[in-house]
Length: 181
Image (cartoon, rainbow, N blue to C red):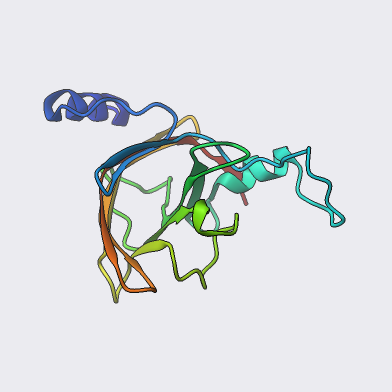
């Protein structure tokens, strides 16, 4: 059975709707569809050289076979987002058996209304989750990788540097990733 067939059977028996492109989650009781990559607002003049939309698109969804790592950034609006997610995890497309559970993963959930438009490790207002040898906040299962599209599901207990925690559940993703070497 190929990975796509297995994922379709899993979804049929578990009652999960197939994800459309992007990331779909339930966060704090709210269902969110984060389907837009980061985009440049051409209406705002900038004195510094800003990345083009093509560069931002690649930065928003990439897979490096040499580093064995995937990173996906999605938000609810291309230019004026309210919510966004950065999801990164180790992945080896050549040797993966599905469902594949990454041993190292990270996720940052951003509420842009709290200020700033960039994902930052020093952000104390937004939520993060990590899965590594020290912490097990996040569970990611990659259900398949075919034609440079990666798809799967995730959940976790996210933490904020300010103190509060928030449950993220029923997360699904399906994203075309650009191969970087």
